[in-house]
Image 1 (spheres, one colour):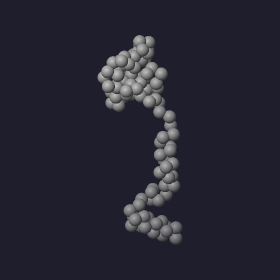
Image 2: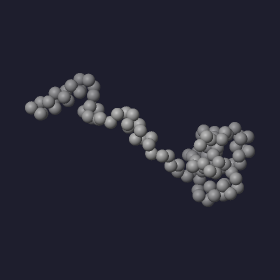
Image 3: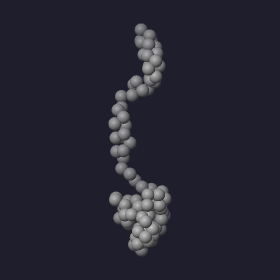
Image 4: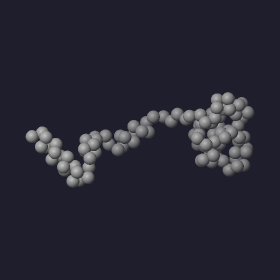
Length: 102
C-alpha cells in the first residue's frame, strides 16, 4: 500500500509540474533568504597589508572604481573592494568619487 501511495504521489507531482524535492521542502523562501543574509560581510583585502599600512599612514583613501565611492581608513572596505586603488581624498573628490556611507 505504501508503494502505491508513493507512486500516486509522484504521479500527482509530475502532473502539477513539481518535483518531490519541492513538495518535501518545508523551508520557506523568507527563511532561506534570512539564512543567506545573516552572516556578516567580511571583506577580503585587495591591497597588500603593506600597501594598506602605507596608505593609512599617508592619509590616503581607498576608491572603489566600480561604485565611484571612496572609503576612509576606518572603513572595513578600506583596501578590500574588488576594484579599487589608493589616492588622496582631494584627488578622489576631483575625480568624481563620493564618500561611502559605511
